[in-house]
Length: 156
Image (cartoon, rainbow, N blue to C red; front, side):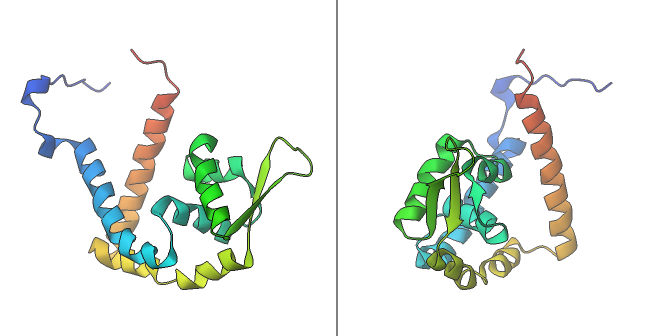
């Protein structure tokens, strides 16, 4: 059994908070992505949707949401903006009209080749050897899974 550590909030320094490390790192990563995505007319969340569709085209909105850990209320406006840009097409699912299916347009498929350089640029920006990036990815996945599991528990 682990001992729970209690801290007086007055003694917390933001620079010592793990959550702040994650938040500020997220912001820094976004600043690296922005100049890479702007020429493609994409935001980072739109890029993530396209990454999912480039791997597996023709998905239901809920399937995209599961992969990105996003609610459909967050995802739908992103997809609508991608559709307005002519990158995806939305249509009701033939088997269940309550569901919306998303497919790439030829323009959306073409953006994949325009974005091919982005992962290498991001890896270089991290400034870590591949082995360390893999460890970090694994650790963050473990933390995310634990946090998602906590969301399902009643709060005390």
